[in-house]
Length: 160
Image (cartoon, rainbow, N blue to C red; front, side, top):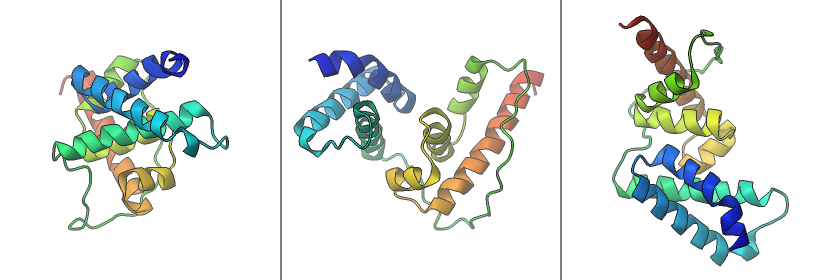
């Protein structure tokens, strides 16, 4: 119970980032905690317990999305581009709330990669493992997500 009390609020926030329905987020968080407690012997002290649990919770949320038949990513038919890192610099007047609102307007496949990269701090190889996609796809979707996010923010700011 101490572990649950210590991490439940943070894990619920993470669940809410991926699942828009609070009840689904609560269920995913609970299922994630259950998986973590059942497999507690698999925890290795190479990472913090919170990071290990966070990965389980995110995977649980992605499983929920897959069950809802939400296409996370499938770029088999799309040509891949070489992703060139662009700047994340934004106008000073853009608020965190504006960014989060714009992020929710992104296509789902970009939204997942951008959230995992920007908010959760995963690198492309980790995102590749989590979403079961090639690293190049992760880079491409991040780049496209960044461009779409910048376009959305610009439209919000200038009312276009």
